[in-house]
Structures are given as structure tokens and as C-alpha cells.
Amino acid sequence: DQQVKQNSPSLSVQEGRISILNCDYTNSMFDYFLWYKKYPAEGPTFLISISSIKDKNEDGRFTVFLNKSAKHLSLHIVPSQPGDSAVYFCAASLYNFNKFYFGSGTKLNVKP
Amino acid sequence: NAGVTQTPKFQVLKTGQSMTLQCAQDMNHNSMYWYRQDPGMGLRLIYYSASEGTTDKGEVPNGYNVSRLNKREFSLRLESAAPSQTSVYFCASSEAWTGYEQFFGPGTRLTVL
Image (cartoon, rainbow over all chains, first blue to last red):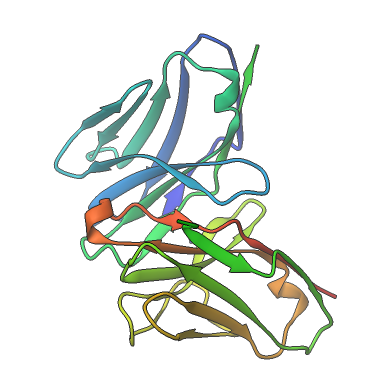
């Protein structure tokens, strides 16, 4: 059973608007969360991370929010750009950082 | 600075054949990983190596073996390929000073007939 879930396989957003990608997890021991972006025929690339001691982390247009009580995290992209069109994976790790558990991904399409 | 490189990029095998996927990183990272990506499943960890000389099983290790040849190289071997191993395979590396961000290679697309 997947410990990290992304329940929306796809999301379509207009350029300039906000994109919100969601991720849920089941293991309350997860200590560290990351978002990756993946273009076709390439490996995933790191986007942003958050530790369980925080509830928000920002990096430019990207903000990740963590709600530990709900076991939920979200990635906000503001404003969305066509170049943001990609598959986004969330991942979670226990304290030892040796194993990372990935969600199934959400394909974001930003329309010009 | 090439980052993480993987060979080959594509491979077609017949059921029962064996092959080794190669991975190398030039970032002096201690930790290396092998994942497979299947539609609707995301990336699943096959094996990882926390440091040179150590390897451990991930979520889906059955049918695979690994070798951490040195700090740079981490190979994945399929001894007797099965159609269920048709997938895209990614190698990754990470280190504490990268914030445990994983750096991924471009992937190997493997088809087992």
C-alpha cells in the first residue's frame, strides 16, 4: 500500500493563475518532505523541501505547506507559467533519509 | 561535471536474459539509489546504498541485485528478466550537505518481451 499518495493524476491551470498540487501521507513518522518536477524523457529534478518542524517553506514562486495533523502537504505555484508544465512528485522520508517514498505524480498543464 | 549518468538509455530484452544497468555520479555523494517508475505508481525504491560497501533493500527488490563498485558507481543487475520488469529505471545520488535532495540520472527505458 502506498504511503504517499497524490490523488489527482492531472491538473490544468491558466497561465498567471495559482497551481495547487496536493499530497497525502499515511506514516506519521515521516520527517522530511520534498517536491520534484519531471519533464518527459528526463530524470526528476528537485524543486523544494520542508522539514516536519516547519509548516511552510518558500522559494520564489514555489511554496510548500505542511499540515502534520492532517498528514497533508501542498505545493503552490504562483504565478503559473507554461514552462511549469511537467509531472510533479512529492516524496517523504523517515529521519534517517535512507529511504524516500514517492507519490504517483500529478501532471500539471499550464495553458498560455 | 556530468552529475548522474546512466547507461544504456534504452534496452530490449527477452524473458530470461540478464543485463546490468550502470550508474555513475561525479558529485562525491555517499548515498546512491535505484528506482523504477511505472505508470500510476510513481517511483519505487529498488535498492539503495547509504555509503560505499553497503547496500540495502528498498520497496521492490525482488528480481534484482546491486553492486556498489566504489563511491562513484552503483550498478543494478537483472539476472533473469521478466515482462513485469518492463519499466523506466532511475539512478539517484544524495548527500547530507545537499539537504538530502536526490539528483537523478536521465533514466533507462527497459522493455522485456
